[in-house]
Image (cartoon, rainbow, N blue to C red):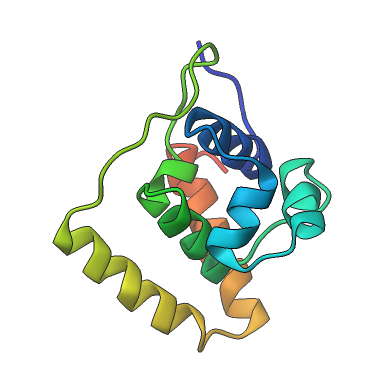
Length: 119
């Protein structure tokens, strides 16, 4: 049975499953390697906009950071379809307009959805 996994651990699993280093992810996202390390180690939580950048760089849907994972297997790469790419593009545009309070509300909602409404 899968245990509760932090976003940073999910990002690390997805990155490693794709054979990427933090430097590779830095080049794909423009996010500093030291920031990525802090996220992966649970010292900071990325904004929804940053998660969208990471999802695009890892070629996975944004929801992949919130889906249950098998503890023994890394996140599998899921190709994005045109509808998913369009949705992520819209999410990125909307996320850029959110206040910090609104971003926190979206993250809280996503966590509740990931927990099956038990947050």
